[in-house]
Amino acid sequence: MGGDNDVKKTYQHKPLEELQEIYEGCKAYVIKDDIERVVEILAINKRRTPTRYYVHYDDFNKRLDEWIVAEERIIKDKGYMIPVVEPEEPTKKKKKKTAANKQQASSAAPGEEGKNDELNIVDMDSINVQGISNEKVSREQEINRLRTSGSMVQNPHQVARIRNFTKVIIGEHEVEPWYFSAYPIELTDNDVIYIDDFSLEFFGSKKQYERFRSKCSLRHPPGNEIYRDDYVSFFEIDGKNQRKWCRNLCLLSKLFLDHKTLYYDVDPFLFYCMTRRDEYGHRLVGYFSKEKMSQENYNVACILTLPQYQRKGYGRLLIEFSYELSKIEKKTGSPEKPLSDLGLLSYRAYWSDVLIKLLCDINAENRLNSEVSVEEISALTSITVQDILHTAGVLGILRYHKGQHMIFITDELLERYEKIKNSKKRRIHPQFLHWNPPSFTQGQLKFGF
Image (cartoon, rainbow, N blue to C red; front, side):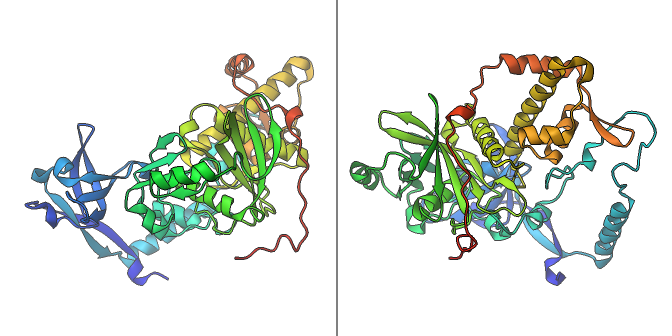
């Protein structure tokens, strides 16, 4: 493998006389929020007047990619940059491999350092949380590392695809999509897609949507309601029994998920959908999916709170609910990796609160003999040992002493404990969960298109 693919891209600056000189792959200077930015031109749409350019802002998240009108935004006086592709020198490739080998050989096994009686703060780089790595990698390296089973089949070409809608109407909510999703191409002409928030059916015009809405009688996700309190409900849906609805859910999700390339074959998954009730029915708020048989013991494959409901605490409820299911299963679980940046922050916040509350509760009950193993914490919470160690390291309470990890309760931890106790965050109440873990025969676990 390699050859012509081993190239590096540089750019040559040129003066810009006419906007027509710009082509896909070039870079240009634009004005964004009154600030000068560098963008890469990913696509050009000449079907409309004026011509529009789909751009990616250097050093910014891909979700900020957008269509712009060149005449309004591009700074012609600054010129533009054309890509120059140069073959990578073989000697440099060898040096990279040698450096990687040296780094791998020099990494010490956990426990070999600090064998004296001193308490050592654990180096977070030595703890890998089931695929969460702290090292910085290029986009290409990250793509290559993504799993090729479960819910995550990743294609480098998929990453580069252009967002195909500028606006999504979900029921009464209007939101801006973040990424490409493989809806039928004939729906993309108007840049707007209408999605019914009960059936998840999609339409290219408001008239079609309203006609469908007047006839559709579905008022909740097509599955079993397994949880209901005075705030939210949860429905369990088998992808094999409700293929169309679950495929529509995956298409909707892909508008807001980047790394996850969702299987069109939804048969291997169970979907747990959270809803809010109103006078019309159950409105979809968010969901997580779960493999019926996960070799890695993941308890979540994909997880998403719809944008119109984000920053309201629903994401935490989804995470907490997934662990309540794991407790009933008497298993430990962890979300499928890699997590998005926002996903990792959400999980860290949940793990931190659970760990702090448990440790401080145990300390308050038995102050003179407050000993609990990481394995016991894992059994009580269904959080994996690796995720517990990672969280303790992030909190700065993990020490290495006499050949074993130890967690110490600090004053800062006690302060956070008081905030958690006084918090008014909504919680999942296990007494309202009516669910038995589904079981499947070997024949039922054979999937295919």
